Image (cartoon, rainbow, N blue to C red; front, top):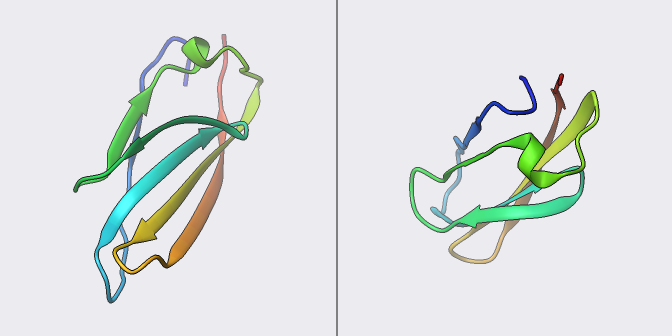
Length: 79
């Protein structure tokens, strides 16, 4: 991605209970959440202000009974 490109995050999950919330983090900084299906979120890395060449994108999801799951991936960004 370029630092000025919109990054779209889309969640797919398999669980006994439906998702209630997903929280999104970029380089360990909270950037937003989604509380309804399809639990998508978009952002522009340069708007966050802490962009490196290799960045961490993390999602913490909570289901309707309070179980939490976490997923993390690397995101390459160039200027």
